[in-house]
Structures are given as C-alpha cells and as structure tokens.
Length: 433
Image (cartoon, rainbow, N blue to C red; front, side):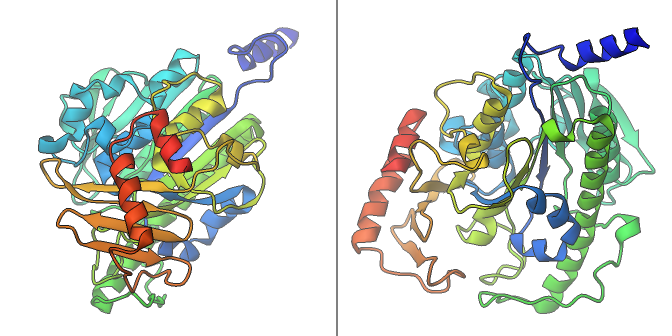
C-alpha cells in the first residue's frame, strides 16, 4: 500500500519542483457559432460555469472560424497571422501551416514545459483535408477528418494520423467521450481543448435532446428583422444541440471531481465567434461588426478565480497568453494579445485596456472594414469610406448610427489605422492610450 501511495504522489508532482504546488490543469471548451442570446435558455451551463467563477464578454477581432481560431491558438490578430479568411486565397489553414503558425501555438508552448496536451473536435476549417496531419504540440489528437450533413458516418484522425469512420455515434458525443476518457487518465499537468462543432450547422440535434425546445417561445430584441418562423426553427435546433455541450461539461466536471483535481483545474468556455439570429435583418451568418457576431461569452472557473462579473475589455488574442500564464510557461514576446490572468484573479491589468480591435477582409485579404470597441462605444470604418458609430450605453442594440466625422470618429480613425497594422507590444500601447 505504501508503494502505491508513493507512486501516486510522484505521479502527481512529476512536473513540479521540490516545494512547489502542482501546476494547474486547463480544460478549454470552444464551441462554434454561439449567439449570446442562447444563454438564458441554457440553465445547466450557467450552473456549471458562471455561477462558479467569473463571467466576461470577449470581443472576437475577426468573427469567422479560421481567422478567429488562428488568433485563439497563437495570440496574434488576423492581420499578423495572415489568416484572414477561411479560404486559401487569404490564408485559411493552408496559410496557417505555410507561415509556420502550427509550430507557434499554445499547445507547443505548454508541451515544451511538460504539459500533456489533447485536442478533441474541430481545429481549423479545411484541416480535415490536410492529409491526416496531426499538428505539432499535441500528445493526444482526435480531430475531424470528414464532416457529414447527418453528423453521423463522419471521419476522424487520431494519433499518428490514423483515420477512422464513426458510423453510429453523434459527432459531439464521440468527441465528448474522447475528451472525458483522456481527462480521466492524462498525466498532470494537462491542457485539454474540447472543441465540438456545436451549435454550428449541420443543424441536427442529438437524439436525446431532439424537440427539447419545441414548446419554447422566444423574445426577439428590438433589432430583430427577419422571418420569425425561420429563426425560431433554427434557434430551437441550435439550443437542442447546446444541450449536448451541457452534458459534456457535466461529465468533464464529474471526471475532474472523481480524480480529485477539480480545485486545481481551470475551465475556460467560449465560442470562436457569434452568429446572427434575426438581428439587423440577418436570419443567420456573420461578417458584420454588430455585437451578435463580435461578442461572445467568456466563462472561467478555477483556482483563485472569484465568482462575479467584470466589464473588462478582452480580446480573443488574449486567450493563448492567458493559458501560458496559467501554466507558468514562457511565450513569444511579440504576441498581439496579453495575459488577462490578473483580471481572472480579481485584479486589474497593470495598464488597463481602453479599446479592442475589429477587422474583416474580403476573400483575397483586402480590408472590408476595421473598427474599435471601447466599453461603451463602437466605431467601424468601411473600405468605401462610410462608417457605423454607436453609443453602446444608450443604444445597446446598435439601431442608430452616429456621424462619421465628429471628434470620436476622427480619433477612432487614428486608432484603427494604428491598431489595424500593430504587432506585439505596440498593440497593447495603442489599446491603453
């Protein structure tokens, strides 16, 4: 018995120096296309995360899948990664790999300091066509290879590039099983990225939650201007899909509790971007700088994280350096984002941020619009010279645009010009002005 206890203690502190506390584990949950208006209809999600930790809202600089995920993985804005769209003409997964960003991700940084790393689900759009390549930095890999409209009979790539076809299991459930199994046995410290493609289409709910919201009526915001029947149908399905995320989170929490490591594990939940649900005339989709696509929830619970809300400005470029800070891992000094760990511990950044960047590109990488968001205002300049200017304090639904040539617009244009081409520490200096 004594030998077993000693072996367990050695395993627990395999990556610790004498006298140091075990380094924390990190479970990162990244969903896809989640509008924040879904949240009130997901009480289990609230019970699992914001009721147990900190609730923030995160600005997604470029609200589309591959550019946002590239930013999340590397801590660099789209204009820095060169991954400006999903397609090959302006980056995509091809540009991500060609520019060597796959060798400069949070997984690589954490693996270098002794973390076990695992990904379960979606990586980057188009990666499933990259000849079954498992990127650098991952000890465990269970990723999409081929997505199907039924969410069954899909293909995955696992460790070593092994391809499998999963015939009889719903895709979110499959990746949940893989994540739970790994979290239940992985050597500490570990970083698990659970990234099911939910509530992104194909819009097929898991069988056990099909019809869960058929009797629910929804309240539309003042900005709603679309076919209510169409949006209602989509919303009911997407919420049913999110029930599978609640199930997965509950299983992950139970697994961490069973191992006795929940109190030293950070759990971080967010979405790669939002999605319209009838607001501003869009029944779905993204590509416009409204809050529905550029703002997503960021929930964090874990060691030292107090329960509550904060209105601190946070960007998706901050996630990678924050994960590194949680792990005590060094990261490149030229990141556009910064660690927000002081905020998550109940404090403030040494130099509080006053604005964050927004940017959107055409299929060839040309700028279509760029903007800034402060705590209570937003300004966006389009390539044709027109603008959108909103006071979020008095017009939270962005119904009435202000002038394009007043003092706020002129100052914003200057910040846009500089932030839209910033790199590294220069981004923070401009954001702090």
